[in-house]
Amino acid sequence: MKKFDIIWAAVLGVCLWQLVVWVTGAPHFILPSPWRVVQMGYTSRALIAEHAWVTVLEVVLGLVIGSVLGIVSAIVLAASALCRRLFLPILVFSQAIPVFALAPILTLWFGYGIGSKIVMTVLIIYFPVTSAFHDGLARTPRGMLDLAEVMGARDWRVMWRIRVPAALPALGSGLKLAAVYAPIGAVIGEWVGASRGLGYLMLLANGRAKIDLMFACLIVLAIFAICLHALVGRFADYLDGYSKRG
Amino acid sequence: MVNGSSGGAAWEVEKLVMGAPSIRVSGGYCFDDVQLFDGVELEIVAGQWTCLLGASGVGKSTILRLILGLETGGEFLGEIVTSDGLDLTGRVSYMAQSDLLLPWLNVVDNVVLGTRLRGEDVDMARAETLIERIGLSEHRAKFPNELSGGMRQRVALGRTLMEERPIMLLDEPFSALDASTRADMQELAFEMLRGKTVLLVTHDPAEAARLGHKIVVLSASEARVWDVPETVAIRDVNGAEVVDCQAGLLAHLRGTGK
Image 1 (tube, rainbow over the protein chains, first blue to last red):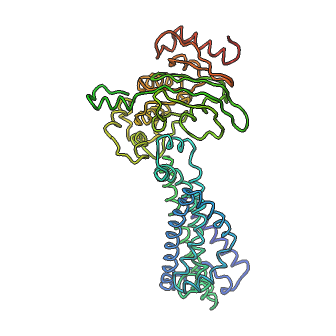
Image 2 (image 1 turned 180 degrees about the vertical axis):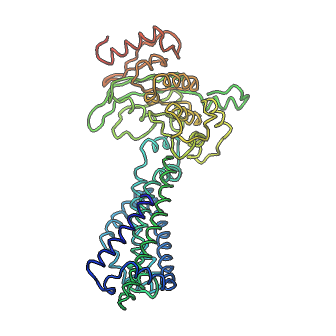
């Protein structure tokens, strides 16, 4: 998507929002107008920034840890038939458990701090990264593997020099998906039990009928999510370009 | 490839290592209970070009994969023996129809791929010499997508030569190239592979007639040795004897000849 398109989409969204406020005449504690939200966001900027920083930290750490775990798991699974037989069914089955349902347990185990939110984020993105990268590693062109075999290559060198580079585009799509899921994980974690973070602030604002503050938090969260997605998207493009050279 | 510039004991060692054996493949092969070929006797001549022709699906590439020791998915009943009695492992190199270059490596890194995959020290000087001989010095830092089909196949040739193996199996490596590039590549490969035992699987009678020291036509029941032109390979594309041989082969393959 072009920058231009995003700006237009945002402008359109705000116009629609304002239109709904006018047409329905909703009170500001149900649906505040865009302008009210902007004002609120500005006056509470220090408060929002303080909590946003926590959420950003959770998301970024979760994303990095989850991606690294996913990448390592995918390589181990691709390298070992035994590991595939043992762990692949468990991995697939584990997806039947809604991760959100685990949030209270995670809070119990890892506390109210950022630990439980990072674990939540890691759990949410681990599967998409592992699955996408593993698929890529399993699809190395047959001819390249034959060539390596004829050349007398060691398995782990084939992995490192051929299979991993050939699977980088697949890893890129896994990471893009992870960038979408990661903020969800952190915010859900904060809803269940936290004393800091945008999710916590939103719940707090909601409880005190400060809907404009809640919307302000939501917008900050959305902007962060879009930036994260764009950043990871560029990294994915780089991986794709590296593997295919244009 | 015995290099005249290296001397003395080193040369003797190299000669031993490089001694290109002949290979005899005999037996039958079936895939999913369907017999592809049976009772086949194929002799691949030491230090020369043996061209293997035959209808699609008759098992030409399968024979090549069997010699390479690659998975074929079927069952081979028979034997593959070398004239020097040594194992084929580590002595065979191959080129396929697709160049199989790794898109993320430049020309030099693709050429030295085998050395890297075995974790050996890379002999860059030798790689550079080879790249010069295949005429790609100017393009040494380019990536495969910046090269033409012919250049890419030359890089693939350089990569196989870097392997320094006495036996070379070629699976239609020139078939995707345009006619004039193909003729150039045939000449370059013939020159560079001098002294090696070469098996060329091809669909093209003209290619076999031009390059073969020996031509074999594979069918379900036999590997029939075909008369080669009397001139010395590599032959002129338009030589009368080449054109004759090619016409005979084509007629035979279409089932209309002798």
